[in-house]
Image 1: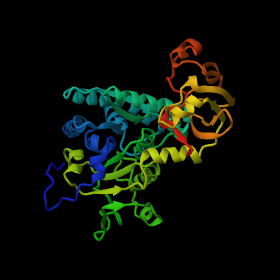
Image 2: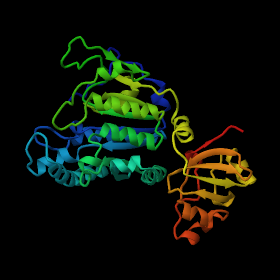
Image 3: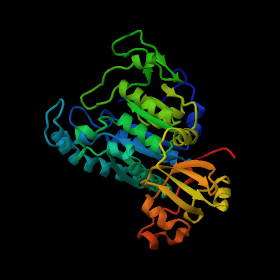
Image 4: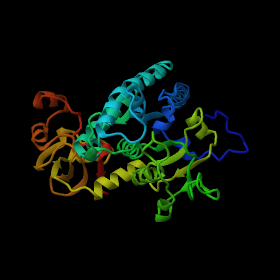
Length: 386
């Protein structure tokens, strides 16, 4: 593994998108974490990455890690053969490897006075809106409390039908979920090329992609190693998800020490630039792509508060219509029927009715728990123009 610092001769221009990113999701592949010859965790490399994370946090930035590696570490401990594993073998390997991986993250983060938290997700957690909201609120709370979420697919229980199968797309879903400014895919290659560079000596590096066209998709190659399920194809798919959510994405080599610091120093990378920011993209998704399941009628005071940038509290809701569950889209209307906007509701219909018109402080007494003070959070709301 090379630890050569970036020099003027090899440096690219560091982009302002990186300097402006306040919330960053970093995907770490199995081949970067596990030694292919003996299955040992690459502790020195991981320590350098955690050093980078600590530096970003010291600069006031939030970091979410999406980490592969559990299966790659566990398969060697269990003596499983090289090559593709059966589903049950992968699940067993993940169960063993996850313990070592989580312990390593916690130990290294602890040296910087940081706390890590493990989040295990399946496909449904990012695609079913109720579970999506639950997962997002957990990650948001961890970030607010200063912890570093370490996300992985729940390989110990996920079946073939409900698996992502690669952490490139999972990381893009997580970046979308938490409205990240930037997604970093640490890879064994320093970006996108016109053709796989190991097979074509004339392949050209592409520094910036502003739109994922069929031509860009055609440049993707096959997976690189037996430890990695991802290849450039899955990274392009991740790019589609990220850009659609307003998140910039960067593909860069992780095969150096301090790979995140290298981005600031002008390392050779490929940037995928979104045409809109995460907030705009999310509100457009809520406003135009989700079928509303119900309606919340609100009073004049709540209407004024919404257009002043506030969330919708139960106290301002005069009436509830429709059949909806937590995470479903609802229409927000004035009591005289004007559509004011749309949003993702934080409570199901049965509970929304009970807390409508009541103070947020009374939610727990009314329904037995407090799932949040807001019926529709401002971040989950797209208002119509007044």
